Length: 315
Image 1: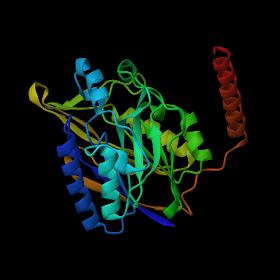
Image 2: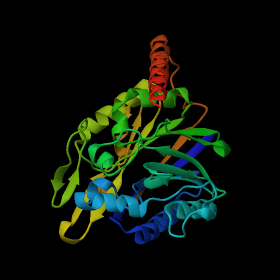
Image 3: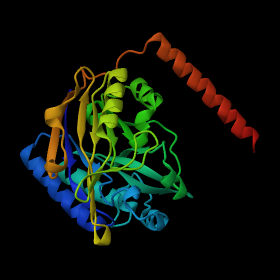
Image 4: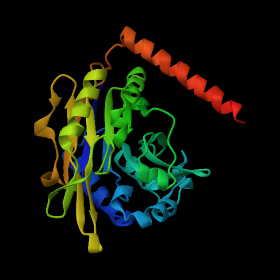
């Protein structure tokens, strides 16, 4: 089955949920008008509020707790202004799946950074809670997720793998997506301080990004390892006021055999543009696991059970 995915490469503003939602709704409308056969709409990274890394450090914790949302499969139980309600409405109106995030999710006493998927029926049908947290997120009280990023789109007979930021440096995450039968992998990132990928860098007047050579090297390696196309979903976030800055991350598609698809990369000059890709789920399947992969997965399972038993002994 062929699945058409439309990725929106757009600019949002910090802490401006309502105006960002209006801009994204207009962008979805333009995408659907130009490509009426789109099955899945992917929002830019951190679509409603921008990332924690773009806020002043003294305001991050307050931002986290004031923007945290509870997620229910029934979107009518969410607050009127919530990102979940908005995404669910868009899915219903345009009859598409929508994948977007991370957003700040509250679940009981814990807070997560979560990528959400909504269905044409307006239901929440999948989520991925970011696993690899950076120091800023840990200090802000964010908890790490526990499950691999796999979102099943039943109507399309497709499985989407999902990762966020520093997840890219851990091949184990991608092995789990491989075992889970992903047909394509989506990653979400805006510029941030990474112990693995380097610091945020100034690339122009008041414009900042990251070392894209390092980022793309990881993307190419992971794509080759699992034999699947990967799209790093970027975008831009604008910090207003005295900190007028633009943080930009290109949207980068990668194929396992050819590497970066350079003519489809969306950068700073492509803000407001869309990337449309078609995936044949009969062809786009993960590479078969080799013997060494099975050994590694068995070791991971054994280590996980050992850690679980150790944790249970503490109570």
